[in-house]
Image (cartoon, rainbow, N blue to C red):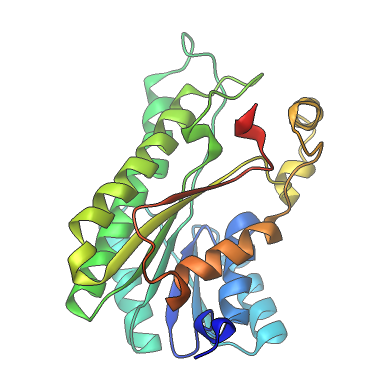
Length: 258
């Protein structure tokens, strides 16, 4: 088998949470282009259906949309079962969904803190656990979580202690699952993107002053593009990364080097 063949995902099935837009949509596109069947999982069903239509038109892949709240254990387990039933298995799980609330630590409400932790950390655990149980019972698979460079640095000028803590938790959770499941053919890795210029980010008037600061601080003097996360995503999903588990990949244009 040639090296490029190892990156192919033909015959494999995947889901991507937060897959309707932004980073998740770009990852779903990459997996479909590599040959996988893809379930676009999101709380926004209408946008998910649009993404599914685009995937089918551009790649010819089999794709479905599933509305799921990743903080609801029952909904997540039903989603995993639906993916496995409709595609004949589940081989790749991309636990990507996440949120951010910027608030000074002394003013942050407990409700805000819990909302971020519930989605970004507990939701990732619920989703990875459900996917892992299926994979452990059916020969293995690859789970990838979306952490952040914020797991490694404290961002400025925005104040986001809960987000930073949640993403650091995602990295350590992924490493822990990787070790527990290493001998049972379930690999778990995380990606830690830097500032990525998604449509929602670029179109937000409130973020525009922050974006200018981020670009000023960045060694590359630009934001990343969601498509620049596609290659690492396909690598981690594919057999090309068979010896890669428990790793965190920082893709940030050297931002954390400064």
